[in-house]
Length: 417
Ligand SMILES: Cc1cc2nc3c(=O)[nH]c(=O)nc-3n(C[C@H](O)[C@H](O)[C@H](O)COP(=O)(O)OP(=O)(O)OC[C@H]3O[C@@H](n4cnc5c(N)ncnc54)[C@H](O)[C@@H]3O)c2cc1C
Image (cartoon, rainbow, N blue to C red; front, side):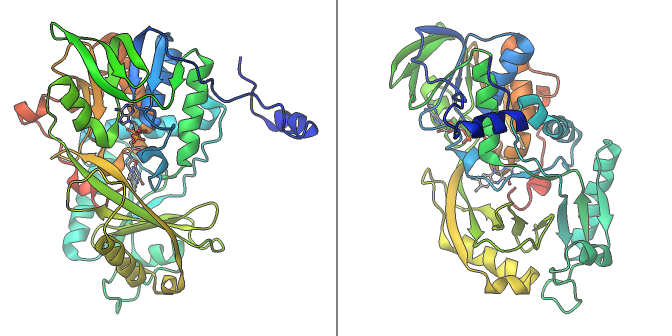
């Protein structure tokens, strides 16, 4: 049993100078075989393992991670969480995730610092306003909170924002999801890892999958840098490297891998207590608990596996920030980084079966999968456990690219978040 985290355990451990904290998860050697192997120790992979154990009683599970937990996009993203998607299929999936976020810290007994500070999407033109209304009404019809704000209401919520009619891109209104917000990305990976480990899942870091053993069209296990490991079922959850893993298994995915970058400013006093995004001028910004402004924008246009980004994106993003918040022009930027995102032609994920029997895939979350982490893990665990997609995952099958039943969420993906 894991030690519970609470104010009492904090005090008890303080008396021993914090020398006696239990390890959050073990680092076992891989067993020769498992019932289920999850490839990828990001938030989605770890959440999958957690729900496999917790909800389906499947505990003979290994998560294989080539680097360290959360070292991929989970630890690189700008942590925006929301469920304001246009189409019913996406709305239901992301809302499932948002509901899980709302109880996640308690469920995991791990503070993921989920902060429902609201998410605002600005509109700068008549056309923006029309599209925004269309989306808000669709979201409301799905029973999800979403509202339209006037410039006066926006100014009240974000006094720093330039809402004057003389602004370069005048603000005509905004959509607002009050239940949206941010969370602490590393904590999400660590909380799921701790919860999965507690239920018997083996978490194996520095273990890269280099190939699959496939006999008569059925997966039998994986080749890794730590030897062959057998498995009855394998789930691939490797975000920007999904195409590489699919290639090892002998099939192709309709994905492109692009760098997506983000940056943070020096820390300042609390100044922004919501998330502001503008798909039109292409920037979004929130303030972290440390005081840094966290900034994101769009993907780099070229395909790459280099976890960096190109300067023009940073330049445009900072121009856009200064257009919206002239006072921020005095800030210094502190760190910049990139991650590799796997984007589908319809900006929606792929969850479900592959052409290889007992090999399942969860990918294509592109620029916006962090918000889906609990829901994605939850439906993928169901899919792995039953061998059939969770009802919420059915529309997101790989087959939609042959049936043509695409779920075009380019508008909701908008500015990359
Ligand atoms: C800069 C940036 C900003 C973003 N901002 C947001 C945001 O604000 N909100 C939002 O919702 N989403 C955002 N995203 C997207 C989000 O980060 C991802 O969709 C999500 O984190 C994907 O989670 P994951 O667990 O699938 O992937 P990852 O965390 O990338 O995990 C995949 C893991 O697989 C491992 N792996 C790869 N190949 C192998 C192999 N052969 N063997 C073993 N392991 C392997 C990798 O090392 C990695 O740790 C952003 C992404 C970036 C890059």
